[in-house]
Length: 359
Image (cartoon, rainbow, N blue to C red; front, side, top):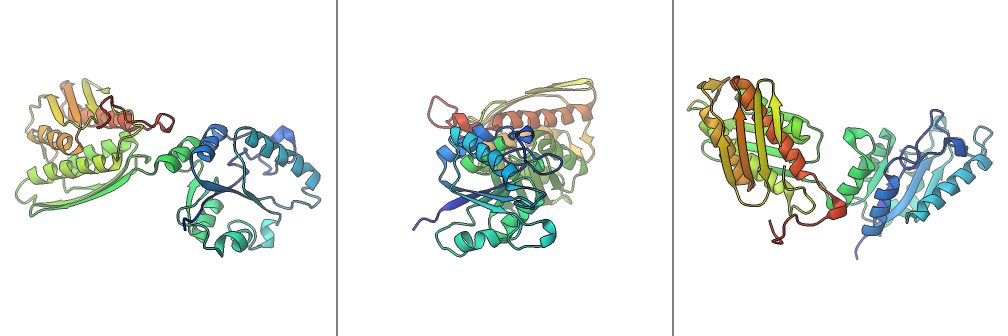
C-alpha cells in the first residue's frame, strides 16, 4: 500500500506575515507572505501531499487573545487560500503559552501523535514541515521528516515549490586511481558554501570561485601524487567535478541550458557554455607566467578540457588582459556565473530545452 506524504504547514510567518506582537487578531495586521498563492497552489495541484496546518496560537481563548478576534481573520485566510485552489485537509491549533511547557505545543508532537505518528498510513520520511522558525525544524526532527524553513539559506516559496516538485539536485562522486583519491559533493541549489582541499592553495582558491559565485555548495577533497607533480591532481579533480555536475543535473528538464562574460579589473573574461550533451572546448587565453601560486598555467587549458568532457558541455572561453592572476580568476568567476545561469530551473516550464527531444 502506498503511504500518504504530508506537508505540515505553519501559519504565522509562513502563510501570513507575523507582526511584531506575534498575534494576528485584526484584519489590519493581515498580510500574506509573498509567493504563497502561486507556489502553494502549484504544489496542491501538481503533487499528492496531504495538507495539514500546524500552528501555535499563544493563549487563544484567554483574555490576552479572545477567540472572537482570532476566528474571523483565520477563516478569511482559509477562504482566501481556497479561492486560489489551496485547501487544508486538517488543522491543528495549540492554545498553550510557552511557559506551560505543553507537549501539545510545537515543537512538541502531542497534536500529531494520535492521527499521524501512530499510523502506518503515512510516509513521514517523505513528508515535510514548512515553517519559518527553528521550532518548525525541530518539529520535523522530532517526527522524523524533513524541513523547509523560509528565510534560511535563501529559502522562499519559489524554492520550496521547486524542491518539492523537481527534487534536490545534490550529487556525490568518489574517484580513486593509483594517482589520486577524490571525493566531491555538489548542491546546485545551494548558497555558495565551499569546503575545498586539493593540496594546491591557488587551485583551491579558483575552485572556490565556482561554488561562491555559482551559488552552489561545493565540497572537494583531493589527495594526489603531488610528490610527482600537479598534473594528476588538477586533471582528475576536473574529471570528477564534471561528472558531479552532470550527475546533479539529472535529466536537465526545466534548465536554462545556456549561460556569460565577466570583467575583472584590467581583464575581460568571457565564458559561454551549453549543457547540450556535446563536449567541446574553445580556448582563447594566453598566459606568460609558468605558475600562479603552485598551479602551472599550462594546466588551465587541461583543466577546462577535462571539465568540459566529463560534464558533457560545450565551453567557449576567451580572456584578455595583463594581470595573469586576474585573468584566470576572472575565467573561473565567469564560469561560475555561466553555470549559475545555465542550471537555473523553471518548474512552470518543465520541459527539455531542446527541439531534438534529448540532451
